[in-house]
Length: 237
Ligand SMILES: [Ca+2]
Image (tube, rainbow, N blue to C red):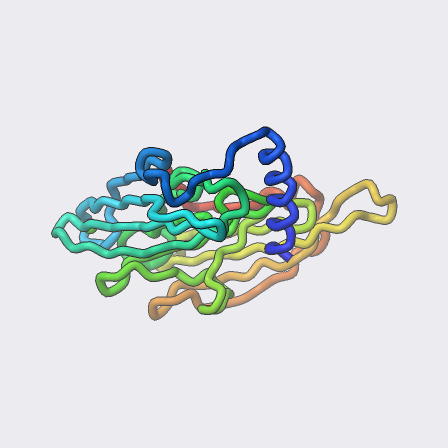
């Protein structure tokens, strides 16, 4: 559903921007660094409490996709690299700043996680992917309730879907509650209400383990929106 929505929206964007009279973008001929300045942040990623350097550059652009590269260089000089692909629905102008989601401490392992929006800020829904330092490598942090085949986190503030995560530390243990609410119009077709589930996971043995779920009952639109996005953590831009 998400893929369809993104495609529809970007098709509309392409139509608009193309009619503005832009010339054919010369993807391969451009110098990525010049047109897409890197994002750099200093934060502890490997968990030794010393700040490391996170850098995201746009490494390549083709008609089909971008390759953004995350490089973490630790204070001890160790380096890990992760290439992240983002679909190119437009003119090839997305920059590291467009896909950069920041860093935050999500799980129970010391060191910050790194977020990249593989939707590139295009379309109705973001498509956040989170990467984390494990055994000297940058690996995807699979969202709670997701599968290794689709590790994306689900955040949304849309009339069809409100979704987000609420983090907390309970008795020293990291915990997250994932909320997913489907929007429907009431019988008058005027007022939007939401229903869904809130599922709680606890960090245990290096992964998010489900510990329980509750149905929300019917929520007003404004109450539902309280659950959209990220709570209990701050993504450092
Ligand atoms: Ca460090």
